Length: 599
Image 1 (cartoon, one colour):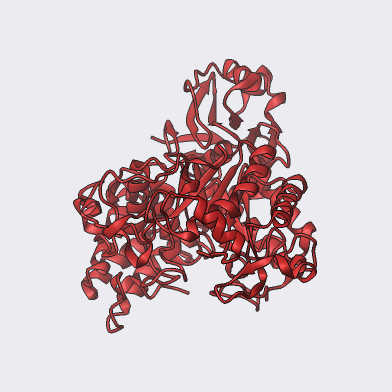
Image 2: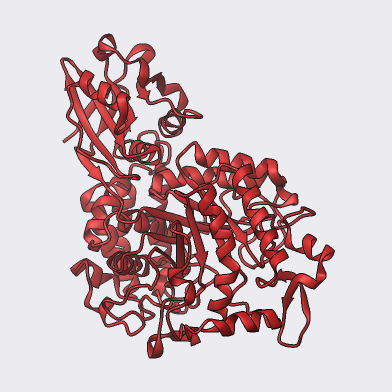
């Protein structure tokens, strides 16, 4: 069923939105529809006289404004919407139509508006909405992208682009830092991801405090929780790179005796001992400065991958813990506890994640030597707002579940035959978030430009069943890359609908983008065939007609291409490209999809 929200005065579409800092709803509408097509008005000013003309009406559930708007429109909203949830519907009031977008919070309101504008098109008459009445509720309260500044590339023409590495210099133009993250934050609204981790958030080389504040402000105004990477005892500290009081290297140049001690007795110049009182005071002061200086939504803490301090104080402190886990887990307790307590005090409702660097494996189920040995001491001793970040990259099936099996079932049997994550196994921490490295530089055998739909679907399914509050994947690759566009869409779907088939994903996410329900089925038919190595002319005969009919086809015989549709057309071109790579070596896991399409 379609509904036309008609243009009004000056041939513009009226968008009436709740007033929030920075007026982001208007920004979303202008970017999706074109600035010249939109006429904005504050929802607070809507009265009965304003009901004579069609409009898109955008506001948050609860509170006096929502109650008044619903009375004006004669509309009964859903009883409750959680954070990140939203409700879409069309209301008729006399001779006018209103596309109503109600969000459970600021982020839900803006993600709902982005969803509504996706499911329709702007015509000469107005906005044709095809989405129907719908309520969307996230399965994971926290859905976030992990990024590092140097390899997060949403501005594609900077000569300093970097695609891999750790502890890198920042080689891009300083101004690219802010623009990269503005684009990623806008993308978060489209993909329903309400958080972004930024490692190397603070560097002298890309603007220091001023640039970091601009990114944090932009995120906060859109309800996206910005989570700076915080190295408590390593990775630069709160201020990653620069001559700053809260940079670890700067601190250790002044206090070299406080460095972490290796097995051979040497003191580090870049990592701290968590067993030194002065270092704990330094950590506390740095975290407090961070939260008092920037409008952040939490933080993402690391201590330095599986680091152990071999100082006499460290050995004595670990010996007092009789819990039996590996030493690096014991060090994590001392490295994170103070920082998490400060974050909890200053932002008790924030998302404060601390990296464990491993899955929650025990015994023979633990791959790669990451056996916890026992439930870590930190598991039940962190502040209430703390979330343990468990890496599930090696817990999901290492022999990737074929896409065909996801077409047949929302719970493929192979997902539960996985020895690394037996059915029913849950993390030992009261609050947990999952982190997946698939299709990134950090996980072999996949690559940064791989399609990883199956692994991401499995990660969402198993994490949801295990009670995780959050889930994360990498967000460094621009959605202009077709393989990652598909990965982002997979996470968009399975984080809200973790028990889903590939067909349900196709209808929810591909159909609005690739040409409708039939085209979406063809798309996943081709994707499955590519994964199974069935390339060739017959497959191309399926791809070409669908690509030709796609709304983003830029051929001059077609109607003018709408903003954003060209990326959808490029998904078809990617299938065609992947099909043409017939003689290339088979990929590590994903078959001919692996070359990554148009890069």
